[in-house]
Structures are given as structure tokens and as C-alpha cells.
Length: 133
Image 1 (cartoon, rainbow, N blue to C red):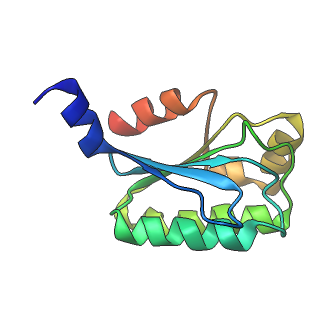
Image 2 (image 1 turned 45 degrees about the vertical axis):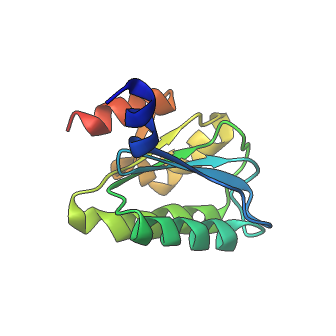
């Protein structure tokens, strides 16, 4: 199997649905959610719905939220992350965040989410760590 065939079997990129402010990618049973705007009450529902479809339909084990394109998260965002964590924790899955700025990092620290959510500098770091465990 050549490299191109192998990549097509392990990576799936989802097209944006109208109203969803994130890109969704599946790599080796890991859902990567690249936030394109703030994770707040304006877009929490659409991100939750789309990610839940993928978690169920693609046999997702781990989830990575990439905050590189987002500068803010409110309590609705915390709810999205906690809800996805609860969906995968019982199957041994893990949740990570990458690309968090100072503001979002502060919310994670104050809320205590870092006790259950892993933080990595890059998506690649998180994917590599998840694939080696």
C-alpha cells in the first residue's frame, strides 16, 4: 500500500456545514476540532451536534480541540468540552486542547479542566501522544 492510499484510510476531513464555526478532521480514530471562532453560546450547539455525529459514526476514541483560531471560550464552551469528555472517557478515550491563548488557558485553569484535559502545544504533539498510549 503506498503512502497516499494509507493516508486516505486514516484521515478524513469533514466539510463545513452551514452554521458550524469549526473544521472537523478524523485521524486514526481521533477527532480534531479546529475552532474558527470563539467557543461560546453562539456556536456551541452546532459544534456539539456535529462532533457528536462524528463520535458515533466514526468510532472516535480521542478528541483534540484546537484553539488556534479562537480567542475566547465561555461556559457554553466548557459544556461542549465536558460533554465530549463524558462521551469518550468510558471507552478509555482522552481529550486534549492545543493552541490555547492566555485568556482561554486561564479559563481552563480556573475551571479545573486541566485535571482531566491534556494540553499540548500542537495538534501533532497531541496526536502522537494519543497514538503511543
